[in-house]
Amino acid sequence: MSDIKSLLEKLSNAHGISGWEGSVQQIVRDEIAPFVDEMRVDSLGNLIATKKGERPSIMIEAHADEIGLMVKQVDEKGFIRFIRIGGWFDQTLLNQRVIIHTRSGSVVGVIGSKPPHVMKEEERKKVVEARDMFIDIGGTSQRQVEDLGILIGTPISIDRTFASLLGDKVTGKAFDNRAGLIVMIEALKRTKAKSTIYAVATVQEEVGLKGAKVSAYDLNPDLAIAADVTISGDHPGIEKKDAPIEMGKGPVLVVADASGRGLIATPQVLEWLVGTAREFEIPVQLEASDGGTTDASSIYLTRSGIPTGVISVATRYIHSPVEVLCISDIDKAANLMARCLETAPRYFKI
Image (tube, rainbow, N blue to C red; front, side, top):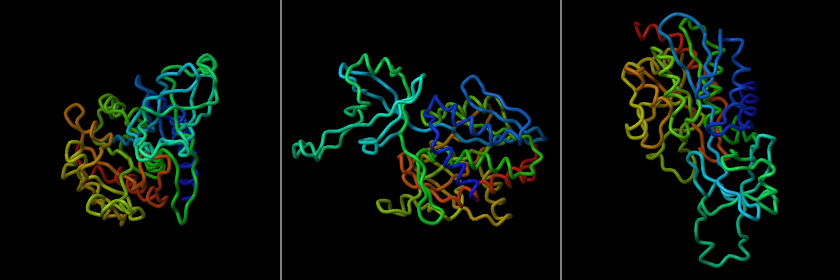
């Protein structure tokens, strides 16, 4: 599993907010090139790799983007205001270090705040909202900052690097969804499936499941599996009744998410995923949640409908710069996806 860990470190440390996923996709391209027959990038930016074979054709996918920020304004003193790209909890942004990605290079900045020494008592009790935050790069004027190429629309990502914790646990930014990318990559490497496989590193999932919708319509596969992360409820602050999934207990199969407004997996899809897990003695957890959703919600409603499943990796502190997961869960999820690619013709007579 050392290869998975090193690849996760590389992907986590890479920067690719929604709409600017290219550097992340290049890592994926390098990893899967020996295992596919052709690769291309579509008009929206999805990386699509094809391994030619028989029916059923199967799309495996994971989104390449991470949540981030974007320059909204540079004021006369050189401080930068921003908008959020994706679902941030504002408190996790305060006092973070960031990287502003200009066309001529990266610029480091910090999201500053007033020191507690000069705060009034009522200010200390108030939550600071993102709209009231600013980025300080050390500039002294609007002209100086803009001359660096920091203009309206410039993407910004969090400056946080991968680190190991106890056991096989690791922490870093953007495990959502760099972990899913590794599940897809490793499954492609490990499988002996004879089906046609489309491996897709999609764009703009965090802002509306956009890339998955476009690529699924284009490819029109017989089946699909999305790889993503899901909430692990095994830490203080969450009750088991609200999030029963735990890290270290194997991949997660989604029965329904977003209270059914997202994906509701069909019985045939669940029979395929669960049956394969049992056949190969891979421990799995089932999830029915009222929280977020994944690219699968777009894929399975494409054209006349595409039978779609989700294999997720349990992850703590999702949508923060300090996400935590177990490397063994990624390994088992990749193994399950690889085996599902092989068993699909038995479950779907197409």
